[in-house]
Image 1 (cartoon, rainbow over the protein chains, first blue to last red):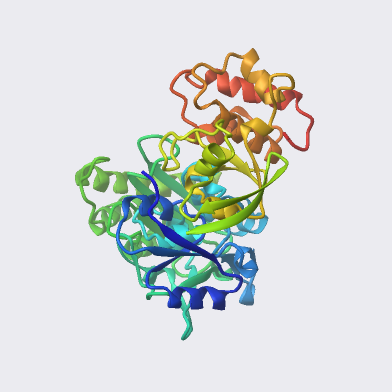
Image 2 (image 1 turned 90 degrees about the vertical axis):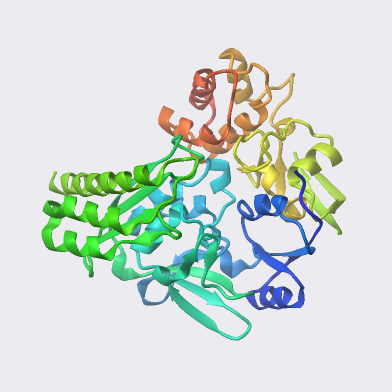
Length: 285
Length: 160
C-alpha cells in the first residue's frame, strides 16, 4: 500500500520543531519512521505533516548529562545505543533489549525514543528503561518536564505526552548503573518478531529495590512488578517461586494470534523464576 | 507535495523532484531505474529492499526519499557488476547462495554493512545480522557460508 499524501519539513532546532508542529493542522514528529511509516500506510483522513527531527544536532547524541546520567537523544538509533561503549559498560541490560528489537537494518534506522513514544506493550527497550528508572525529558512550547519512565505509558499506543510535546532525550540515572539482567523473551521466531511474552529480571549493585522485574506483552503497557521485586530483595533466590506467582497475578494479558492469556501468564511465572535462577548462578559462579 | 533532493547514489550525484510521500525504494526503482532493491513486504520485515544509507544497511521501504537529501545511498548496482563482482557477490556465486535472486541484493548489502562494522563475524553474528533478510529458496546455509567466506578474504577495515 502506498503512503497517503503528506507534507514533509525538517526542523533545525527543537524550538523550530515545536513551532512547525503547532502551525500545522495535523502533524507528527518523525525520527526513524519504522513504526510511523507502516502506520501511515494504514491511515487515511486529513493530510499530515511530518516534522523530521534528524537534522537537529543536539538530538543525535548519546552521552554524559548532568549528575552523572547518560542521555539518549531522540534521534539516536537503536543500533547506535546498543553499540555505545558507555551504554554497554554501565547499562548492559539496555544494550541487550535493543538487540532484541526488529532486525539489523531496522535497528540502524529505528530510535529508542521512538520505540517508547510508540508505546507498544511489547516495546523491547521499555523493559530496560523501566528497570533503570529512566527519565523522559519532554518539551512543549510552554514548558520542559521530566517524566519518570514508570508514569510514561498509559495504554496500548498511549503515553502521557500532550499534543505537540516532543521527547528530547531519555536520561539513564547514575544510581542504576552497573546492573545485570536476564531478558527472557518468547517469540515465534528468534528475530524480527515482537515478543509473545518477555520478562527482564535485573539486579543492581545498589539502590532500592535492588531487584527489578519488567514484563512486556502481558498488559496494556510495559509493566514493573514492585511487589515481586521486594520479595526478591528480602529473600533472594529463595523467593523465586513466590516472586513468579506475584508476577503471574500482576499481569493482565489478552489472548491473540500469538498466544492465549493463560499461556502468557504461565510464561511470566516461568521466565521470572528462570531469570532469578540464571542470575543467581552467574553471580555465584 | 513536491521537493527537490540531491542525493549521491552509487557515487553519482542525483538531483530530482520527488513527492513527499515517495519512499526511497520507489525513488530508486521508478525514478533512477535501479531495480536491484525489491519491494517484498513493504513494512520492514523481509529485507528485500535493503540498501546502504551512509554505509549502513536500512530498509528503503521505510525511508522517505525526502529524508535522504544530502546523504549517500549505495544499491546493489553500486557494489559490483558482471565484470567486476564484489567479493561477497563472488562468494554467493561460488557457494550457490542465489536461487530465484529476489532476496539477493538486500542480503548482500546487509552483509556489506555487517562486514564494514565487524570484519570477522562468527556464524552466530552473521545469522543475527541476516535475520531480517528472508530467503525462501536456499535455506540460508549457503548464504551464511558465503558471508563467512567473503569475510575471510576481504581486506580488513571495511567491506566496501
